[in-house]
Length: 370
Image (cartoon, rainbow, N blue to C red; front, side, top):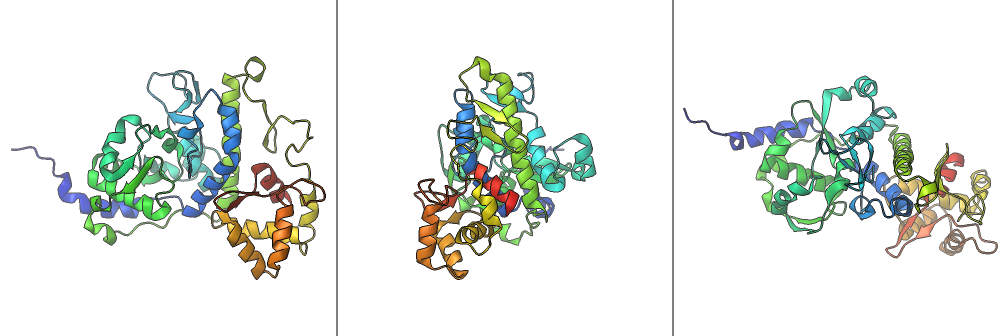
C-alpha cells in the first residue's frame, strides 16, 4: 500500500469547517487598539530607548497589544522577563492569552480565569507568522515583504490572534490553501494597512470557493470598550514594570517613568503635575456644561472614535450637524490645541494626514468626567 498525503483533496471541507469555527476580534476593537498605540508611541519610544526596537512592534497601523514581547525560545532565558540577548521580553503565549481573557471576562489571564470564561475549550492561532524563519513562506502571497522585517509584533497583535476549538489549529499551519484563506479573511476584516511589512496581497492565491465560506461574526462583547481600556492600561503598566526591573532608573540612563494607580506618567517636569497639559483641570468643568462648545466638541470626538480613527473633517462635519457653526468650531477647536493665553487648553493633536487624536493622559481625564 502506498502512503499518500491526501490533504489537498479535502481543503475545501477543511476551509468550510474552520471558517465556521474560527473567532476573529472585531474591527472596532482593532481600531481602538491602533488609536491607543498611536497615542502611546512616544511613551514606549522613551521607555524602550536603547533596549527594545519599538518599530518592530508599534509600526504604522499596529494593533500589537504588548510591544516588546516576542515568542519564548526553549531554554533561552526567563519567561515574561527582559532578555538581554534578544533585546525583548520573551513569553510562551501568556501575553496573547491576556487579550482574549480581557475581552471575555475583563480579567488577566490565569488558569482559573481561562477556565471560568470557557476559553479553555479553545486554543490560539496566529494568522501571520511572528517568526523570522517563516517569512520566506509568506513571500508567495505578497508582492512585497520588507527585507528587514522582524515580525515580533505579530505575536501579540490583536488582529493576528484568533481562537479555534482545541485540536483544529494545526491545519492553519500546514496547508498553503488554508493559509491563503485566513490571509484573505484578515484583509477583508482589517485591510492591508495594518499588515506588518507586507503589502500587495496576491488574490490569485485564494481558492475560488472562498466566497462560499460562512464565517463567524467577529467577536464584539457588549462591554468591549471597558475591557479594552482595562487591557491597554494593564499592558502599559506590566511592560513598564518588566523593563524597569531590568533597567533600574537609578543605575541607568533610561527614561524616568513612574507607575501610579490611575495611570503611567513620565516623572513630572517643571511644568507642574500635569506636564504638557497644565489646563487639564478644566475638563471636569466642561463635563458639567453640555451647552458649551468645548463640551460638544469633546463629546463629538468620543462618539466618532467608537467607530475608529477620527479626522478633522469628520469631526467638523459631526459638530456642524449638531448645530455648531463651522466658524465657531474652527475657532474653538484651534483653542483646544494649545495652552497659550486664554485658550481652552491643549486637548487635541492634529496630524499632517488630517487625523485627530487625544493624548492618553488627557483621554483618561475625559473619561473620568464625561
